[in-house]
Image (tube, rainbow over all chains, first blue to last red; front, top):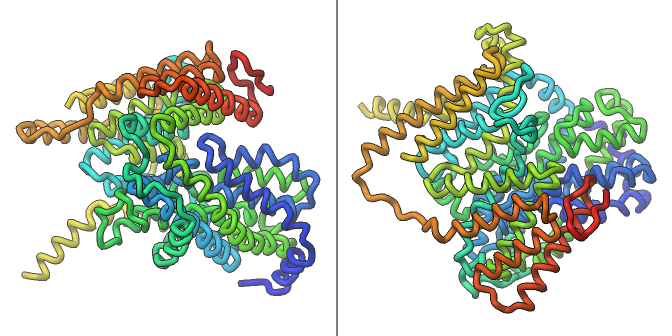
Length: 499
Length: 140
């Protein structure tokens, strides 16, 4: 599976000179900063710094851009843990348990765990990529719209397990989220649910809606709280606790491995990869845990599951980019731009003819993971001081940052207005025990779900029997059925066996 | 129950709007089945809540505590176009601090000015499009 001569060539490319590594530390720092500031996205950082790669050779350019990617993938977990604002859609599940840990005064440990899981995830993810880049790209080609639609439907049925309250309310929230995700221009070129607003023609901006529902609505509830961590003794920043959290991540080897596998294979699916991978890993970890009720209340395994998956989904999306030349999201689309700037075309030919460069990119990411450990351990204690800021000051600061960030995402005032509207919606959802995460996931996936179902309908000519010809779809649908009725089926079978 | 009725009404309105826009199967292929499922689930939840209506109502936070903050945030966002990100943010932060009981004027004024102008300057430099500003100049 490994082309050893090319691997040795890759090593000599990387380690005979320090030049390729000079750009890695600035790249990780840029990624950390852009990931940690809600509204500034990794793809935005890469786009802003893309022109600089003109002055680099292709190897250096790729190292610089993947360093931003690696730093940003972890950076998104910092506001998720400290402020309940997932810096990116791939850090949603990190907030589920990371933020409750912070509120309990375990912010140092939570950030350390996130760093540990991210770094181990990057190492595992790129190891899998090194071994399986060919099979992964073949798998991606077999994922069609029918499979995508089935994955999304499966995800929505799993939403019930995310809800701490009523399962029915959880499903209603998820489906309403899906409906919100379909607002705007439809495939037949007509607008729906826009109420005449031109800003909604492209749909509801998903990330500002996510910031509003997750963060702003939570901040409204915290205005009567003095500090994020109520216990003054627990409010200290401890490098030792961050480091012990970092080591603690390794105590969940199965969660890490499962999250990493989900991250690589789901992350390789263009469009939904990283957003879905962290949720799927979280849900499965919660379901398999002996104490699933502790999830959402500050269970460290939840942070590990999410971070392991979202950091490895970077490797998955790189597999699709390198092997097929297909960008899976904004960040890899910018990388494709760097390919073009250096007159290189990704795809099977690139892998075949420039295997040494592909291996060098993969090996460089191992190095980046170790550099991320060092930089993360330096910067996390500085950022963790946010727990010492009184809520009187923290709430308006974070709300303002959310508004600036939302403007940055949309380029007009529709972003801030979306934050406002969805902060109120989120507050109402929380007040009446509807599931905010389920609704957010629905909003993120609504458009893709509709697109996938339409393509499936067009390909199949409206024939249901088409599904029977798609084995992956069938497997996903069986999983969907089992996740809905598996518990009841198990109960019935157990009762019969006892008789 | 009021929330359920509101959700069901909004979903029905969206359904009518989607149908009015186009009755083409491609336009309604996901929207219509979803609306039907949501309405059925809302009805089931409504009946369940009706059945449990005699049980104790869970304690919920006071609307009075949150309403002023939501009002202030809404005013901030909806006036950004005229006040700009620099002055709008400064006024929002200062008003919020005052509302939360901060009476140390040097802190209140100093923090609101430094945060708002710091954020406005940083984002105006980083973003590739013009931002509404009253005092600061946007880079583009």
